[in-house]
Image (cartoon, rainbow, N blue to C red):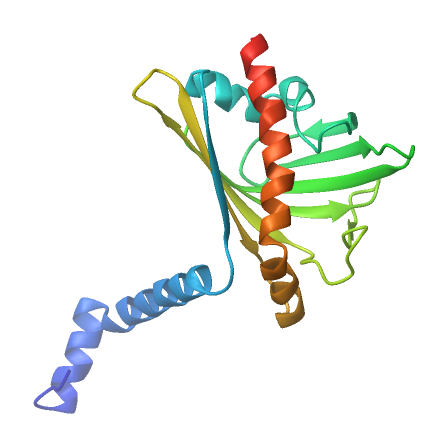
Length: 199
């Protein structure tokens, strides 16, 4: 944009907040570039259960404990504070008798349609740790769950995950495991489907 004089430019900046508007637009551009860069894992599944029941399966700790995690790996401990800024800290008992800990840090919650969180492996004291099988797995993964009604009266869950604050090596590892992530989430969502069918 060109101005006829410096005085006119300064007036526009002062009277219309042009500097603030430019900074806000550049910030949004940065967010867009960050969100669109790198690999994204996406999967979805339809359920006969209503969206309201699906939402409760995520929002209530006693329900979450019934289905979340890999097949055959029960939840052994959990603490949930389901709100933006809250967290879900959980332990899973592995088939060899060990334990794996994880931590969700809730960023956005829009009931009953959207949950955005940062997902990490952790220790029993909530300290972030590396994936037990991969030193180069992202320390943090941003995961978005989108819940929608279906025309049949059921619900659909769409999951989007991407590396968050990740190094180039972590992004490469994430991209190389998209198929494996699909297999892992398929098992977890089968458990969710079975749980919802009981309710």
